[in-house]
Length: 81
Picture 1 (cartoon, helix red, strand yellow):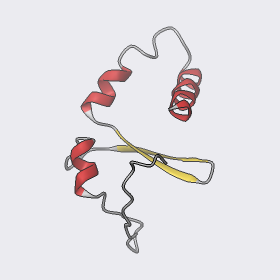
Picture 2: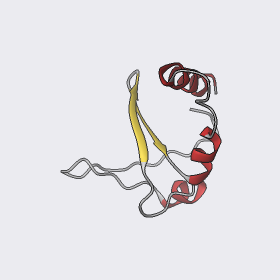
Picture 3: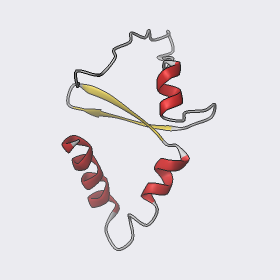
């Protein structure tokens, strides 16, 4: 976490649902019906919204390589950020 990161607290419902703060929804262009990828990375839960911009960035990224290698490369790039 960087020093300019603002931390907010959220609560999980009995069904495991959580509300993403409005500021983050606006920043990541999350609208009603936006789907997300959820996975574990170490001791973190990663929630990655599948917005139009994200899906367009993936366009053509799987051409000529295996899906598993592409996913591994994407996760490696995320770790390096």
